[in-house]
Image 1 (tube, rainbow, N blue to C red):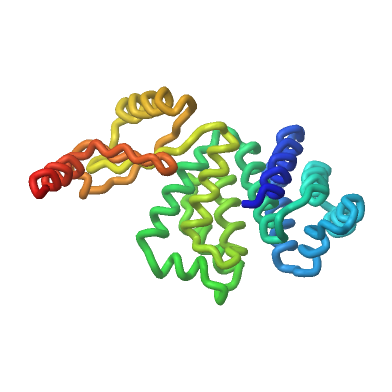
Image 2 (cartoon, rainbow, N blue to C red):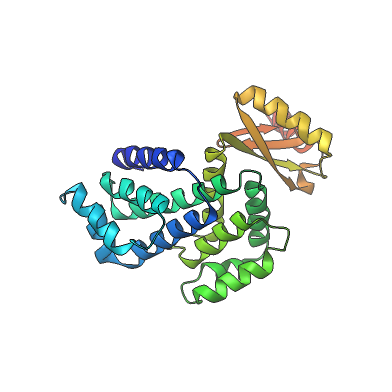
Length: 262
C-alpha cells in the first residue's frame, strides 16, 4: 500500500466514523460502488485521476451515485477527494469502507468468527474455492451458493460481506479475501485476532483465560479463532499476525529432536 493510499484511507475511515446511523444499507451501497468502479476502467480512471480537481471527481460521484444515501455519498466524496496510489487501491479502499460499515451496523455480531468458520469450510474444499473464485461462474450463482452454505445462524453482516466479495474477487483467492475482511473487522473494533491451533476444542473458561492473557501481552483486546488440529498433540499453537507462540508438545518434541541431532 502506497503512502498516498495510506493517507487517503485514513481520511476516508474518519469520515465513515463520523457518520451517524450507519446501517447495512450503507455497507451494501459501498460494496455496490466498489463493484461499479471495478467494472469500469473509465469510471475508475476518472475517480483516481490525480490531475483532475477534487471537485470534479466529487461531481462524478454525485452524477453516478446520486441515488445513494447521504452517508454513502459523503464517504465516497471523501474517497475521491483524496489522492490514491492507483485505481486498484482506490477500489480496495471503497471495499474496506464497506466492510467497516457492515461491522459498525451490527456491533454485537460475531463477524470475525463467522468469516473464519466460512474460510475453514473453503480451505477444506478445493472445488468450492474454485467455484467461488472462478471468473467463469455467474455472480448470482455464487451468491446463491454462499447463502446456502452460510446457515441461518450467520449474521446479516457476514452474509453481506461474503456474498459481496465473491461477486467481484478481482483475481484474488477467496481465502485471501476472507482473511483480509477479518483483519478489517477486527481493526474497526479495535482488537486483534489470534488463530489458535489446539488438538481438542477449548472450553469457554479456557478461551476466556487465553484471551485475557493475550490481551495483556498485546496491550489490547484479542479475539480467538480456534482450529482443531490433531498434529498439535498437546498444548496450543497461537499466531497473531507474524508472531507465533508454540507451546505444543509436538513443537517441544521437534525441538528436542533437533538438539539431540545437533
